[in-house]
Image (tube, rainbow, N blue to C red; front, side, top):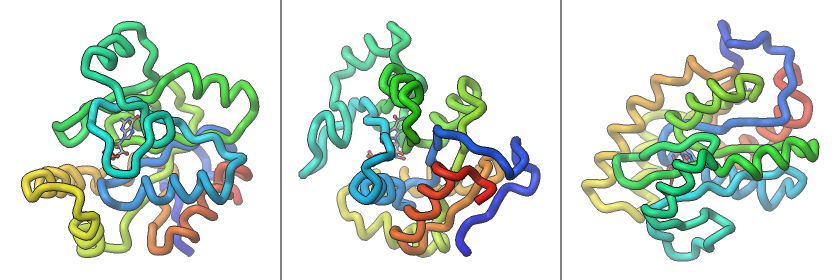
Length: 201
Ligand code: 5GP
């Protein structure tokens, strides 16, 4: 069993929320889990974030992210169009467009945000009814292995991300539920079960 519930969670374990906020340390596999949810569970609506970082090879504008300029991001912030936003790894800004989340929830769809810890804390302020899920690596060594294995970052960026990850791991207790990401498929199924049936499942 790879799911644990916070002993002193903000909510009693028996609850149900259509909005799941998935966070966890860098390189734990949040993006991989979200991508697998997207293909295996198309009934789940997944937010597409805006970001000021450049696309990686294979990333498609409007699918993986909305790639925007610094000026465009400033405008989104100024017009209060973001549910939350954060500067991640001191490198680029990322934010969740507010309108699409509200529309998905209004339509009754199970919805998911895959965001960093700073963003999750902001959503907890504005949408405390959401279910906050912490995705955790099986071990620190495995987290380092995944970060190095990705091979898309420079040495300096990797160091910065590991430093961020150390702090992020300590935040587990702020979350309602922890899922250990040993096997992506298992993590996806646990996550979707939580979305559909709540944390009493
Ligand atoms: P990457 O650049 O590797 O795609 O993502 C870097 C980090 O940004 C990941 O930890 C991811 O969860 C986070 N992130 C992606 N979208 C958002 C967002 O909309 N808001 C916040 N706060 N973080 C995000």
